[in-house]
Amino acid sequence: MKNLKLAAKSAKEGKTVVEVGDVRIGDEFVVIAGPCSVESEQQVLESAIAVKEAGAKVLRGGAFKPRTSPYAFQGLGLKGLKFLKKAGNEVGLPIITEVIDPRDVSWVCEYADIVQIGARNMQNFSLLQEVGKAGKPVLLKRGMYSTIAEWLNCAEYILAEGNPNVILCERGIRTFETYTRNTLDLSAIPSVKEVSHLPIVVDPSHATGKLSLVEPMSLAAVAAGADGLIIEVHANPCEALCDGAQSLDGPGIKQLIEKVNKLNAAYKAL
Image (cartoon, rainbow, N blue to C red):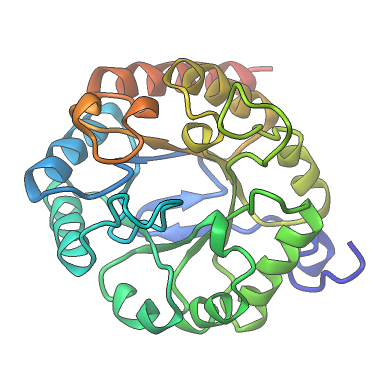
């Protein structure tokens, strides 16, 4: 990783810990959970209550949804962002949401505690520079066709603007395999930790696209050394406007977090 300066492990002493209120990503294992899309005020509040009760530390939700088809649900925009913030305040969780346009960064940051750069925008360099200037914690997803070196260089764009609060997110890469939506590259976790000080979380929901695989891949991510998970949760997955097939319900996320906590405890005892 010859081009890395600020993201390289040698650039600082110790690992980066991103603080969001009382949450310390990189220092404690953090589960981020919530619906793929904010659909209504009631829907996001129900999901927020479920993930809070299950033990998640951050509420996720999409107000802007870049979709493969222009006819698919694109999100509620500002209205959805307000619903998400209100739900987060009511249950006492910080929120994370995706920003897709450099022109929206400043006002999205007025609501979001963490801004997400999605896989499709990983190499949107003007967007990376804007979130770097904003100073808010940033979760940077790996692009579906991107190497680890390319991903870390995109993190470098954010860091170079003076924002040290970058969280990496492995969410699967595109391969010839068609059984899963993407191929979850768990080797990226120890690989990143070999060369960078930045924390890394895993998104098994988007990586697999299959509800049955979310739990085993979450536990595998824990075993590989991930600093957290980002999980899609919907109060009524069968009614979800986006990605219902891979979304856990309230009991599902509670069961998953219980298993994750037990596995983390077992590893600490080794």
